[in-house]
Length: 341
Image (cartoon, rainbow, N blue to C red; front, side):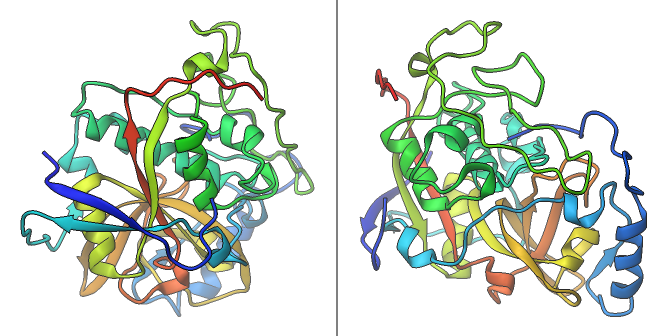
């Protein structure tokens, strides 16, 4: 099915969350619509390729969490495809249509009151590729808990992390399963709810060797699944497209500005407001809308944000740095290790 050979080339100094709608009350001590409406009113005259509007939470409660201040230090070796066949990439591509049997491609997770986008989007991408490369023979829902709590080289848990080390952790240590917040799904359900007040910040969960008691596996080491190889993708539009087309979604980070939090539909281009931090998302495709090229991505702010949790962003310009920090990898179905922390 996949007629390509992957070769790793070291570039520079390479080092080596959850589903569904927010639970609980979203009102608390803050008005749920006032802030995003206010932003939308300022953005509307400036946004020519997208439409702003009211999203359920105030903008400061949509958390980010990708560390982008030292990308080269944490970037993995570059993955180079040496292809055996020539393909013509389509003008439009959506991984949800190419691999409809992989239901994880349609799911939106919610990072809640934790700067865990780096862990959630990594776990999402592991999940999609696990299904895609098994040709739907094996589905496993990777959770963000292991990355948040046990990957100390990844960063600072709920205070942010890096993409490259998360992929390397998948290869070296493996990652366990996980379901939505407060669920009985997987070894470790996602541990953090949405924010209920403006000054709330979730603590990073502690690394544990045991799965939740309702799960059918007791020890985390027995539940973990592994990657075979992890790599970065070059900052090249065509190379990123080919990686997605051949191997499935990729993980990307970019700079988030205030106006992005009021995104509703269309192709996002930054036009208003200060930079709010680095953010990591899953990139699942591309296309052209009204003459504007875009990347199609899934966010981790719940289904009530944007286009039911998805969004489009300008493609081919490295807009907001979206093409400067792209990572991916391939699954290892046979590997099983007993690893203690």
